[in-house]
Image 1 (cartoon, rainbow, N blue to C red):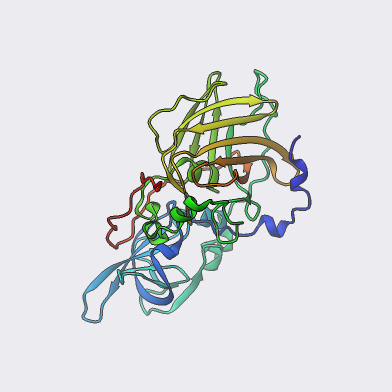
Image 2 (spheres, helix red, strand yellow):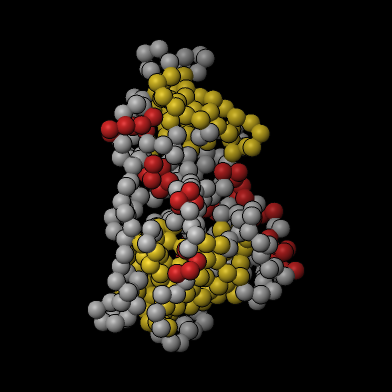
Length: 372
């Protein structure tokens, strides 16, 4: 099968590494040089993507209380360690230390978290999103961490087409390459693209996804590391995404869609080429390509190529190679690669975006054209 060799030599240490991906950069909400420590009683535990949210009632010095929002990374990563909806309950007492908010609102990120004895405030256990809370609390027998083995799927459908049907999730520590992250190669912007990228309006603090706007197709389909489900039918396919909860229905056709009104996910057509699935998308609204910004113009189009390979330790692995063409902003095509393993029992985590407590700036618009 194609692309099998890219998986050889992959160590278990890489496979078990944690993911730092998040719905948006924490720098959009929190300061990097100031921390807060709060102690309070849990009033709500929202085990959701794109971020785990804990509500704490914190007593003030004057005897009143303030409800604080405690924000963690995506629940998908917590679940791998054994966390679930019932890991924290109303009435639990926590101490949380993390970054303070940019605007001073009662919200803190999670750097350190401790379960406290509500009767005397003593520490019962240190909790970590990367460790099963049952183990942290000294109850290893109750551990609920996932231990499922690799999943292999048939190479073809009963009708003979290549089989891509099923749910996949990114292999931890082996996500592929490409994307507007700090360590990625610079995007091939031309002068117009550089001006758009430098626009103060699109600073990370004003990322539309921070305020729960839905993203464009490049950020949703090409960039996301989270789960996705493909279903194949005689005349079309569907793709559902765990992150942001988007769904695409894409019909088979050899001709690109005609120019038309742009939309967030654009207009797409699909076709099979040998043992690959190819999707081409046009009529895309100008949009940000990832959680670190990097805008694309309204003339961008995207070609996604899906291929599979079987690996003895990982099971069937889906590789998505997404190439973005943007003659308005890019000097050459730009490619994002994602590798995701099939899972027979992967369960989506509900998506419930919680916007920051600060006021939404007037210049945060999802459907903005940066072209001059």
